[in-house]
Image 1 (tube, one colour):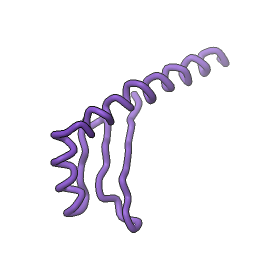
Image 2 (spheres, rainbow, N blue to C red):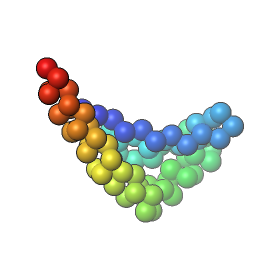
Image 3 (cartoon, one colour):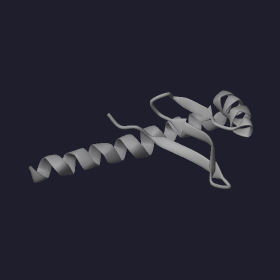
Amino acid sequence: GIEYIDSYVFNKVEDIRFNSTVGKFVGYTELGLKNAETWNKGSELAQELGQLESYCKHNADLDYSVALDKT
């Protein structure tokens, strides 16, 4: 399977991450925890899931198809 990760970093510290395996935002700092809670309840989560469907899965299918063609 594929895994889509979208990290948000400030001053070289990862505050928050969307991970498609978990299916939600996870916070790693005090601010990240607060934002993750808010973003998981709002439109941000739907946007990330949309990116996963439209971009990642589409391109993974293309890459897989090209790999099969080369074998």
